[in-house]
Length: 464
Image (cartoon, rainbow, N blue to C red):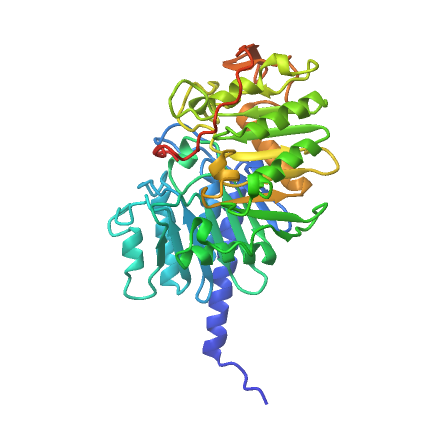
């Protein structure tokens, strides 16, 4: 005969459930206080995007929606739960407007509660830096009780992930994939977007990739068995899938994420929208032009800081080539639009560093087969195809609700409702009428595409 639980055990279980319910209520209230469109939820997914203010003096409502979503998951962790976090850069000392300080403070609380937390960082991250007194990666890793696991990539590999894995037990396994690093600038100075997905198959695939890193295997040394795992979300029109860079077996790039994105662009029927921090892949430029020549509306945004005159402006040639009028067969051209400099102002991108840090494409958001391509990977060789490229994660999400959430982010960031057909030309940062832009044709004489530059071949700016 089973022994009934003691009153102390019942009280302990009640305390755990009470805490869990309080946390869920707090998260729900936090989301309710945010502009509704910034936190879009489905049965097993969440899409969040931030609202940059370009200042550290004030916090806009919803400015830190992505950071707060991530911290809410850390605050759910209890004894027996497990989490893995990974980021390329880590900064921000302020508990209010920073990235690192509030995040590590939440990790410290989770460790106090008995949760297991692992943290993976790129080799360039300073593990001794204290973001608050006594609050650093190394301090958390050297706790006397329940220390945090801490792992770093070798200097020969660029670990570009922005990931969170949360195992709350049973089927509560969630995967966070963002475009922004765990920094203050990712929220106050940049436009970023993140997904949070509950799915065991996706969780197991990303956990396998993180396990390789925890074992010291980065880049081309890690196992490929978990690459291209498929998973199904509630309400999706077909299975989604995930890719992990680099792609050492991708002969000529044919088995890479770049090849898959190119095929999706060629299959587009109605509309393509993209937001890309860095973009220099010639094959994807050509695919977008071909789509426009088939009648597909193509609208994109690339930050001015990465398409201007700076030596580090990797996207300059892409911006010039995409709007060259001579390559189009009709008046339906690729249109590049600027991003808003801040979420509340009337100014537009005038060269603010890394203003658009999102890396996504939305294909046929209003069609029968909408797809979102999203993750930390830029559209560059080291992000999408190089055998010796970065450690990256790219999601291919076949879901109408997710596509509509990304579409809302694009509209909020650019003020552009549908992508206009203005006859092409490179779009200036000058605006007329809330996102209807004056275009000027920039003829480049059909200059052939240059040798591709590597996206992270230069030191990452502080905002990255």
